Amino acid sequence: MIIFGAVDFTAALARVGKLLGFRVTVCDARAVFATVQRFPMADEVVNSWPDRFLAEVGDSLGPRDVVCVLTHDHKFDVPAIVAATQTKVGYVGAMGSRRTNEGRIVRLRSVGMSDADIATVMSPIGLDIGARTPEETAIAICAEVIANRTGRRAGSLRDTSGPIH
View 1 (cartoon, one colour):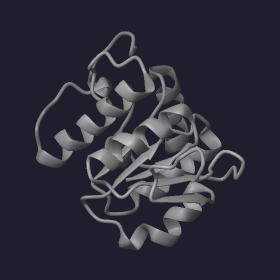
View 2 (cartoon, one colour):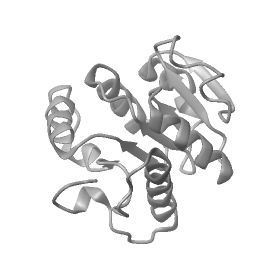
View 3 (cartoon, helix red, strand yellow):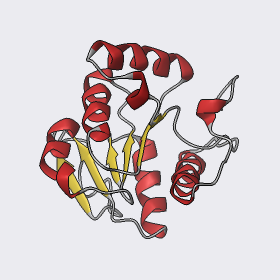
View 4 (tube, one colour):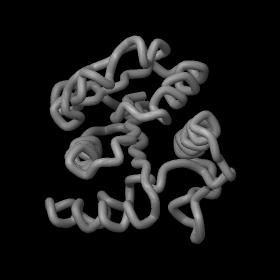
């Protein structure tokens, strides 16, 4: 599980991911935020731009791998999503409100991403389980990853309307 972004949700997702047996990498370009002290459950903390990191490791990723983009900033998340969808990862998800996601889709199209590739990105990320806390949100994300991996249909936030939380 590769998590981009050093926000509160990142630490919770790193913890839940580890409990589920994932090898967890946290990556953020801002060295002051991406530290081992902030993410002690991560197997690896990388200070790099997400798209650059994916350029380095992308060939080693496969269908059981997961990329979660939690950056909340289009200068990070658009290149990360483009790079992630060019790998063979089994799941790419991106955090953000419905309005943020609409703007992100416009930006992804403007950099040449096809609607078919955009449709593979689970955004808003996670299942609609009524999550409120970072830990609950991490569970909602991991539940969606599991459902995706097992081919089960579960209520994704992407496919619902109304408030996310």
